[in-house]
Length: 132
Image (cartoon, rainbow, N blue to C red; front, side, top):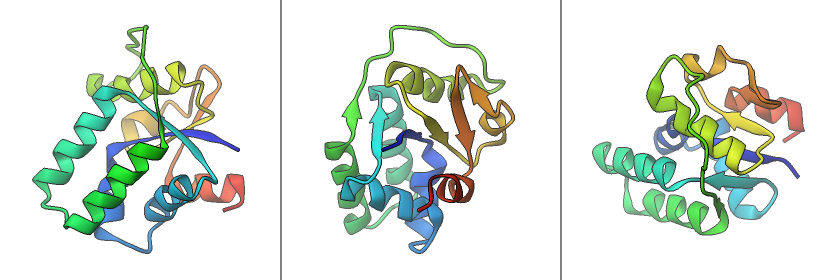
């Protein structure tokens, strides 16, 4: 079973497009078909953005369930590989959690393609690669 870190843009895409690859990936984590890892920094960013976009309660509840099922990891290493410094938190979470993938639609992460053996893919490309 693959282990993933999901970028904030998946959380937001899932809020707006309930039939999106992003939403299906979140559902697969909740169903136990994909393992997800996160750090306090990535979770806090996601919850803050959800509040800013005024996500409905049922979607917030879904994301809170996602976090209950996912594994919290602790990054011991400062990474500076990404052009957008804020996106390094996703690399740090992936390394700390020994993730196989970072799933993102962010060009700054996607341009890396891979980081220390961790593939960085768009949601649809991830679904195709793992056969979801």
